[in-house]
Amino acid sequence: MTCHNGAVAETLSSQYYSETLIDHFSNPRNAGAMEDADVEASVTNPVCGDSLRLFLRIDGDRIARASFLSSGCPASIATSSIATEMITGLLLDEAKALTREDFTEAVGGLPKSKVHCSVLAAAAVRNAVADWRGRGPG
Ligand code: FES
Image (cartoon, rainbow, N blue to C red):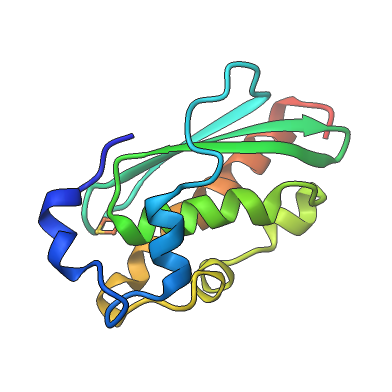
């Protein structure tokens, strides 16, 4: 996983980011590629060029596992990390219905200038479910 650690080190403070966000950025959950993924979605943020790859293992109509690889900023890594936790165990429709605001809220909010960073997680979940639906049994 790569990120802009050096560039943002001085701004990764609790005055700028919530404790939850810092925790998920420092210890991303479900980070890494998934060898046996059923579906993968790659999205790039048009605002900054950062990208996210989301991997899902699907069991019936439910997300059994989720993992991600990111080349994004702390906000995108944290929202991706928490997104993998939130969608695990959900029905595909439930996961698809989650919005960037849901992920933003879950990490304790984002500074205005970083709100666009949560787009990646939401778009990746939507795209992965749509892709799976388009070719799978779900
Ligand atoms: S600055 Fe690119 S996703 Fe946050």
